[in-house]
Image (cartoon, rainbow over all chains, first blue to last red; front, side, top):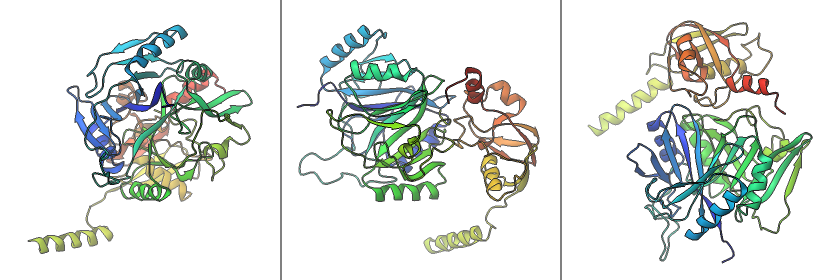
Length: 306
Length: 137
């Protein structure tokens, strides 16, 4: 198996202002399933097309935004290897005991130079609903809402993303699939641990620890259109789309959850191989890099975050 | 029973379509120096202002109305309510402190009018922080 170390995004934990409204949005509209609610009130969600216990965690709080994003590693011993490497890079690593989130084993965590908390874990229980394994039909329970197939990636905003790039490449073995360089420096990076065009991305921003969006993958461009119908029918606040990204080539809609956290649903995007060169965009072309049809950034892209 | 329920639903839908189902109160939201917008009592003030700008009714406004998530999280649409009463949905404490709230500083995406309102635009906290730090953007 060629794919070792970090496999993929495991889960993200977001802060929401109104938990019942958030649950309705993520289950009925996005199409996730609620797996369980923890004793501390956190709510654990997944797509029926994911095996692991959960991929999306909601925490009731007074401000919106992101608490952490966690990646799954292939072997338990990888956690010790990465702890050593992260520590040697100079970041303080802490330990989260198994069961701090239901169904998830031990985790290690640290804070990036951009102010975001990143965690790694290996063990996740399976939970229902999940894909069938023996003579598998295409789904076990009928897809609903926007028919999200997985939590796919997140875009985070913060300072020092040059250091994030160095850290993810040297310590976590990610590759940089695409980058945007402005005349005065690095604006944005798209990083992958596998063969998707991105698993996590960063945009340079003065405030640390900010959240731009969490993305759900859909099966097709038709499903992106269906998602847009749902957004209008249920008065979901839209940022932009349906459109396409030049960067990653994903066909997309940006919209907001009831607490103002941006979501994305998208389909497509190219396959990235680790020997592919990094694709680069400059200031004159960043508009179509971000929004390929509009060919310019909207007001909200660089300024609206939680 | 089932049939009469269905009939009632049909009547409701018809009433809805002709605007009778809900006794909607409409108020006037005035944005100081920029113009005014009619706003229903179940409508987010920001969305009424966005519509008014779309119809060219915010004649004194020579820039795009500040709008972001429209759901109380991002802080872009901070305003000070100078006159009038409103009810409010949750807003992020990162952008509206308890002191702000006591003074009537709110995110206008997350308030609904109970009377006519007079508002003044406030710059978002993040924008003020950005200006102070002289960022590269």
